[in-house]
Image 1: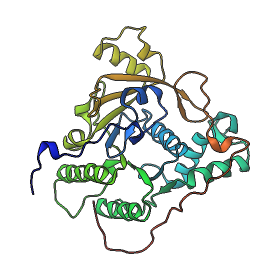
Image 2: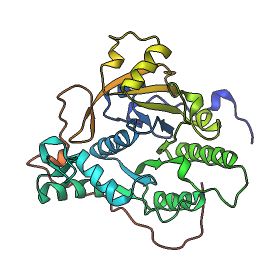
Image 3: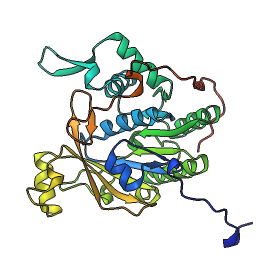
Length: 321
């Protein structure tokens, strides 16, 4: 039956528990966090802070007890492990050493603290092995994991432009559009928060929503679109002209800006949240001096008994979204 009566629609009350808190206070206050059943698109210029934000929200989701999948096609898995471990430990559990070139590098203060962080993340996160970039194969592997692990509540894909759509059609943008629409439908039917990173095209001004690379359907399909900006000297000059901000604007006195450019649920499409960057722990801070400690660093921390995450290694038939 193609239609149902309006008064027969199941009533669903708004439930804040259906939103995963990002830990970025301004973002959580404006849009309540990232919703289960929604497709979130994160974008921003190169080196703008997308990786920092991805890692941080992963740690915050894990701290809240959520389980997820992370597919990183930008960063090798060993490097990803080092990055997430540093973010999880925080500056109190890190020390800084300098390479022979003088470049500072953050490392855990002890093997014990490093193992505690890796174990804490590992109990809630499965990372894709990156053996293929083929969109259908990745989609099939994700679906298998969700079927085997129904506790999964978030999936992060970094990034759309790395996916291989060969063998489908000659129009890459059409295939990206179909893939993103399937992602949104999958998020909705499974009640999972899907976070997709997409890069903007190269622009000479401030990247805007119409500059997001690929098909325009990416933005149209997404429930929420977030830009991450690094507040560099160049950004300040362009922002003052584009947004008509004054030199003293609060938006120009932070290290990074997280901009909400679309949010279907709350209608927010014009908010900037300022954050400060902590280079030692690779974290965004809500305020200078903020020093969040995750539960595994507490002296009386005890590992909770959690459902086992099942790693899929069989060769089942591919079942894309």
